[in-house]
Image (spheres, rainbow, N blue to C red):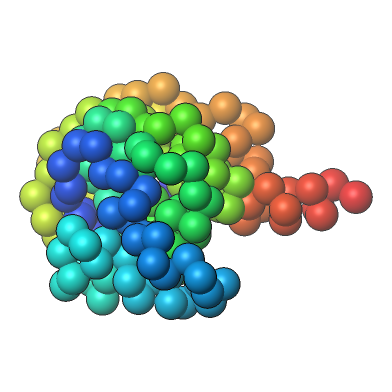
Amino acid sequence: MKIEGRALCLGPDIDTDVIIAGRYLRTRDRSEWARHAFEDLDPSLAPRLEGTVIVAGKNFGCGSSREQAAIALREAGVRGVIAPSFARIFFRNAINIGLPVIECECTCSDNEAVSADPMAGTVTIGKHTYHTRPLSPRMLEILSAGGLVAYWRGRR
């Protein structure tokens, strides 16, 4: 499983309230969440998320434990998130809904080519390759299935 796209570079401590503001959680319409992703950080980001790999600073997904944050990113077309560290609950929510996340400290410029292999533990951004710990076999199985629900359905 490879993750490929263009880099969208963000800073550290991206809170789930910034990913999807609480005022949009009254609806269960996931496309609505996608349209408003990062609205309070930069209103121009949501339309540009399709095909991106977010490369962020430490502590991505901190704040409330809302699963909708990971869903909003996936629904907006984000192909994966790379950061040196994640809030524990965001990390598992992302895996559980089929959004690849990789812990890796790296640098980027917006729109650089990103290729990551969570099985091998490599991330390539532009001409630089970074090495990190691969995801566990179970997490890779869940991601390959498209998320935890699909994983369990496939095991019946």
